[in-house]
Length: 295
Image (tube, rainbow, N blue to C red; front, side, top):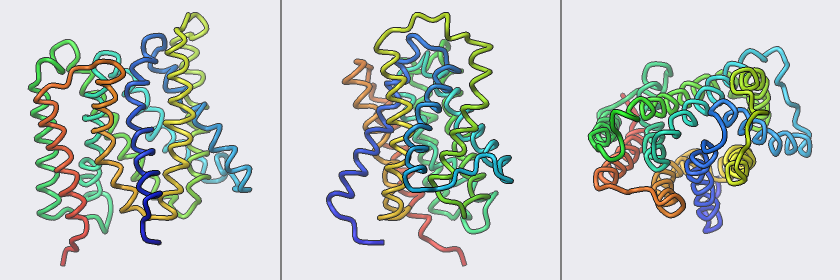
């Protein structure tokens, strides 16, 4: 990998902003759309730029190849379920809270990788990072302003959504030899196929009278926060590697909290700030611990 340049850090920051902006846009989308419709249209619009890129680069999309069952499973676990859970949860919680809760993904990944991979075993430093990070989340749940009896279940659903992201990531290792663009296009196609009949049957979106801001947010979620963000991620991974790209985990919750305050005027409590700091420190320690090899 080449040495990182200012442009690379700029692109990493843009990627973090795009992913962080998803949370307040999901909140705005919930003003008019149900969680199933949000998940479906986000995946549908997200598939468009990825499929176009595959066509331009002449990359074969293997959504219906002999490995279709892997693409379908990953599409359901890594897209359909978390997108639905997050959209459902954000209906009753602030978007900045969702950003902090979703930031636990690297912490959950560290725990699951210990049990389900051969070369990602947990060590003392990684265990410390996980403990600090999740202690911050436990502390966050004591914030009655952000989490109370009315939205406690919604907050848990968002945490579950982050866990499904991790499970989907582990499943992706089964087809890691395939091109990233092909895998992403294929799982987006399967996510669209699965959610289309479910959203039509349950939420009947044709009966809606959506607000313009909700519709624009939904289109943004698909094209930018899903499709273009994934393509930008591919570019950073190719030119700078996984370690560099993983730094986005530090920026997303920070930007998510700031954007929620600026766009939606959401409250930033002292407990939220302490929890955010604890999660970021936890992620940092986990990533540092990943460089330590067990004898």
